Amino acid sequence: MNFGYTKMHLMEKLRANLSLSK
Image 1 (cartoon, rainbow, N blue to C red):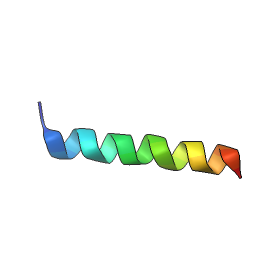
Image 2: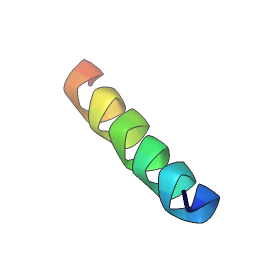
Image 3: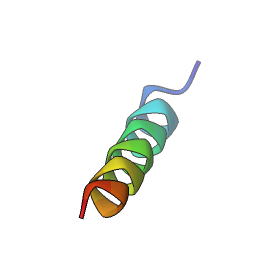
């Protein structure tokens, strides 16, 4: 498993959540 890819994916998910919250 590529940690870098996972980290990027998590960041993207987090950003999406923030966008929805706004």
